[in-house]
Image (cartoon, rainbow, N blue to C red; front, side, top):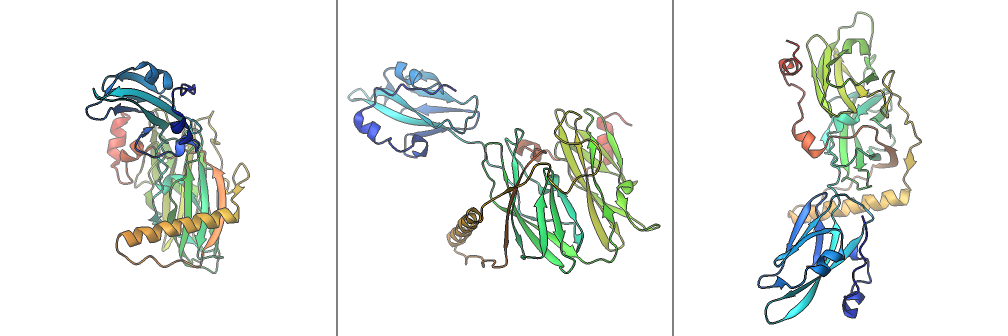
Length: 389
């Protein structure tokens, strides 16, 4: 985008009022254009624009001007754009003046990760590779690269929690059982962070729990891929396994049949996708996943998923974590007071982690999440779509 310098007509007093960065201005004449959208700005009632030339010349964001106002359009987004000042000459028939509007670009909607109780337990002393697809996250602009942050763990000193480009990696100690709270955040490609979300994972003790593998696989556009989930589970010989469920895919549809076969179909344009599966052996459970990618994508198309990130994880300074923790606490107290409630008790037993990794699997966009297939969609619907029956 070309930045406009057509502000020479501003009065000295007005210029002095804009010494602070204009992007921070939030007065009545501040206009933020919605992300990749338009915004019409109407003149006050009884006023008309007397000259559209300075309006149109002030900024590339102004695409039209008429007697009753002007039209703004953002065809792309630049987080460093700042703002433009648009002078609008106008009159009410008795008085003529120039009203100055401070025009900026509204950032895209921040990513969202819901706080939730994860319904599938992990055995104490084991490892849970919790796929990003199970976080239920949405992100409008993560296709160009987002980030996942492990913010904290509670209780402290009972588990090691890290992350890879596609999974949370949770390793509870053998001596611990009970709910484990993992707080995460997600950033889009412009560095806008979601609100913190707490994922509560149940940890249980088991003598010899089954082990479900997390694997890479090729993504084949327009075709159904089948996966024998029983073949992805390591257990004692002769042990009876049952398939509990499959999680939703992010950019496609997956259905798990009673035969233990998962059938996956990508949506048009999908470059990578993922789904989880959950199995039981007696009273023990385990979680595995399938992460799919095009051959020319950023992810492998075969082999086991590594519990280590491809690139070294970024460590957030402790002072930054503590400041973010206090800011979140202040927001919770303020929200409780606004509802007329007592603030929630502060959790003292929290271990700050501060680990960030790049995402290699884009979460669903808000629109995609609304059309999610769901875990229990009938298998017949998928077969009908691909002409398999």
